[in-house]
Structures are given as C-alpha cells and as structure tokens.
Length: 298
Image 1 (cartoon, rainbow, N blue to C red):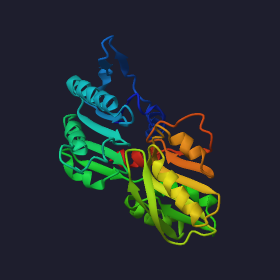
Image 2: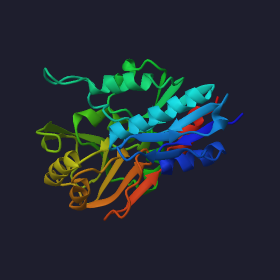
Image 3: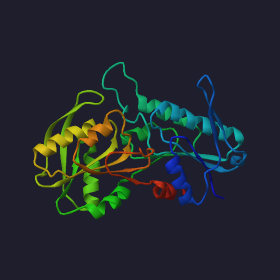
Image 4: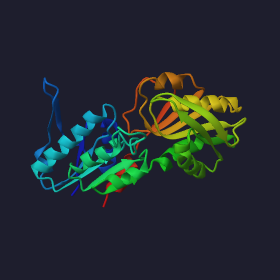
C-alpha cells in the first residue's frame, strides 16, 4: 500500500514533486494559528494503520517549522498511524554541533533529541552541515547527498577552463567530490569567520588564473563566505564568470545583494529550501524528489 504523504508549510515545492515521484497526491492537512500564536494541526483520518511520510524542512523560522513537524507527527501517532518517516531535507542548527566557548548550547544535539520525540521510524536529511551530528540521533538517520543531482545539472555548462572551488576548509570534501564527478581540477580558499555574517578570506590553494570558478558549499546563508571568496578569486585572476552551486539556498539577510554584486552567471540549488522568487540572477532549482523517493521505497 502506498504511503500517506503529508507536507508541512515549509516544503510545498518539494512536497508536490515528491508526490509525483511516488505516484501519490499529498493528503489534505489543516494548519491554522490561534490568535495567541499557537499552531494547530489536523491530519486526515486515513493515516490510521498506514505508513505516513512527513515532509518539512526546518528553514527560517527554524523553531516554528520544527514544532509544526512534531505536531504533525504527534497527530498521526494519536490517529493510529502504523509507521512515521520524516523527510527533513534541510536540518537547521546543524552548525551548532560543538561548543566554541563555555556558555554555549549544543543546538544540533538538542534538535536531534527533539526529533527523537516524534516517534519516527526513520529520519531522512540531505547534506548535513556537520555529518558528525548523525551520532546524536536516537531514531535511524538516513543521510542523503544531492551532489550527483547538482553535478548532472552543471555538466552541460562545464568547459575545459572550469575549476571547482571550496570557499572555505569546511567545503573541501564537497569540492573534491564535485570535481571528481565533473572531471575538473579544484581549489580551496582559507577563511576566517569574524561574525555570524562576516568572514575574511586569507589564502588560496590551487590554480584559478584564467579559469571559470564553480563555487560549491552545502548552504548559502547570508552570502558572506561567497563574497569573501569571490574577492580572493578575482585577485588571483579568475574570469568574471561565476557559478555558485549549493544544496540549501537559504539566501537570508544580505545574501541576495551580495550575490547581485558578484559576476554571477547562475546559482544552482535544490528545493530543500522553498525557492526564492524574483532573484536578480539566474537560479536553477534541481528537485530532490527522485533522490528522496528512491530512499523511501522499500
């Protein structure tokens, strides 16, 4: 029997695409907010005795969307669902996987603990910012990667002068993997983070002069890392033809303005985050639906 597909308010684009990939229509789920701000969720009765797949990214506001997912799961469990599976393509707080100084919380561990309360038989995530967070989950975690999908989207525009660039040391493994998929060389930039949205690039390893950079990272949040990397690449003599590829295009704060000021040919991302409309540059969205659907099928 096909699963019942429930889609949270953070992921309508992916929910529709996943429904088509699975051959099932998303079930009607009622969401409303009481005057005091409390969320109220009602799930359909047909979840009783069925496997239910709940799709919800914890995009901003992360706490609200996480609570909505947990309310949906609790409603399904109390309605008698036989099995609950969560698809959380973008998992917020994954950067808080360790404490940089005393007095800070382990936000990633806390989010993992909260998801465990959802009684999920399995949780799917895509390109965690910190893969080490897998060890914090009580429920079985399936960690998927969108890199092959993104590489397929890039392949037709890759030339002999393209070079894959990691904008910081944390993106080195992704850059190396993407370069291998595209059969291109790669380079890495060393950065120092000054604050939540300011970074300083202090060095470059690899040859980029006269080449077309493909900047790759797991997420684009405020765009500070990309802006700093772009300055270093320009100083090193790369061409004025940038491609940015990321799984999670959050584009919060000053991100759009920062990307607008780059010689950006296109941004390639997935629908783990609801696509932003009206961007001043070309944005190609690759759906995660085939990847997630394969992982959901028994």
